[in-house]
Image 1 (cartoon, rainbow, N blue to C red):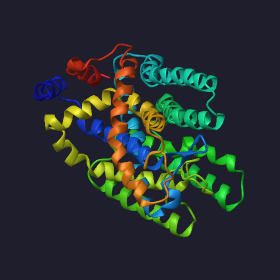
Image 2: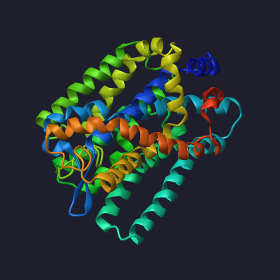
Image 3: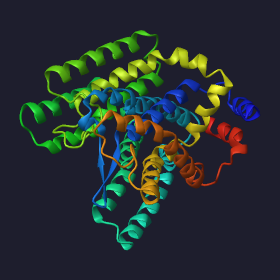
Image 4: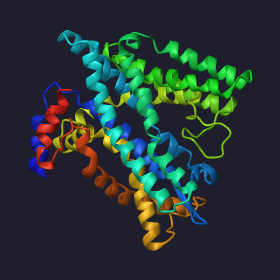
Length: 383
């Protein structure tokens, strides 16, 4: 293992910005752990229905603050896209060539997920599994794809939005929420925020790529300003405190994106900027850098298959042992939360199985063996 770690570190070009990879890894891990902690599949009368502990245990709401890290992913996405587009243009590459290379990395693993779950859905229905259960499982499995669509759209618009000030999409979010919640406008209007809301951190990342977020002052302004705005919106404007969707709630901060989710994302972006120094020092340690490099190699595989891994453990456990605490029981007490923590390593093992089966589709269509990780890390560094 030490030799593998050393080789990964040696294969990384000296000009690689490891802190960006570290932030992206933290964002992905936050989403994965957040879903595993707040998504429950309850076995009831022969069906599986999704539920959330946040319904019955509102004191667990801070969990959503720690693990809803999508804004950081869009921040790093805007940064990397801005840098890579300028580098591609400097090499003489066309916009079409640049965009095609970036979208292939996103949609190749997504296509595999859709094929596998289409076949699984047909197989379950043919085997007599109830429609409610099939619908719940399939919906959870493909739910990460909404992120890809938004991220792909913003990536495609990089040449246009790369110089847009984040205040402009933020103003759109404010206007949409005023019309929705203050003037009784149509709820469907909120889906404009799916683009405008995530465009805010994406534009911040683009500004970062141009060197406009230097020093620690921008980080503190975003952290304190975004945090204060979020607290005010929750306290006096009636926005939910949970930064994830809660089944049965009248309003969700993510369905569609609300102003509170955007201001919370600004606070997260500020925290990310303030972490750059500590992360830069930490990533100089080969043992810390190696797992970050490997996770970034297969980020989309981990993101797309983490819900499937959780559901596989749930279904196998139900078939083998019957309803188990923290896995099939209703999330209505702190005992469930403690039991769920015990299941996290099992989910991780299942996700490792999904990675072994499908990670090759993310890296140019060829499998990447463990003993080839250093050369793969070098290839990733060139993207």
